[in-house]
Length: 220
Ligand code: DC
Image (spheres, rainbow, N blue to C red):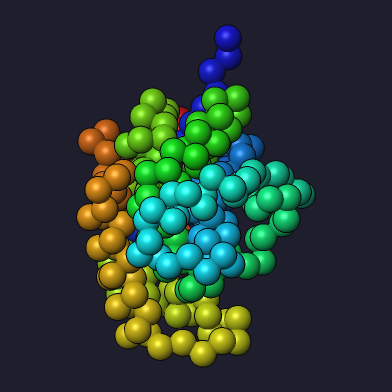
């Protein structure tokens, strides 16, 4: 039986995981799996239903009705929520904040972790998230914990918004990042942690190319 090659990249919001993971995937010709997008799709579903982020019981019940799956169209991951392509709605602060609450609910995690494991079992993947090395793929071939200072991460997010022509408040963004980190790291179930055997990379003072090269070296 052939073994699929799995690269796990975990880290806090805005550390550059998706940019780096996409590059590594492209270089290796692996599939990039963005697990944050799955949690965001679930959050979108809950927001549309009007469920409160604090209402864990309702979230646990409601998530059973959400069918989330992923597909690849022209090499891009497309997230389907009950059959609808929801990619265009996932990258807002509102959805990100809801995802940070709803992803703490075990029923939500169980459902999405199962889907993630299935993908990695049969396919060479670069998967990014919060608990990939620690929970989803404990046997991953390469494990990276990618981080950067909250200030660097806020600046990156700020530049993204400005480039899209949106207005943004740098201090507010950094505050949101600090709060989200806190929730992601202190939740009871599958908190964000650096797995014991993960390699720490701090991208604060590294270019995208440098980080990508380090991970490719780990794959060799
Ligand atoms: O990486 P992101 O910002 O798209 O993630 C959105 C939220 O989902 C974030 O608050 C943490 C959560 N998440 C998670 O709990 N586990 C993952 N594997 C990926 C994301």
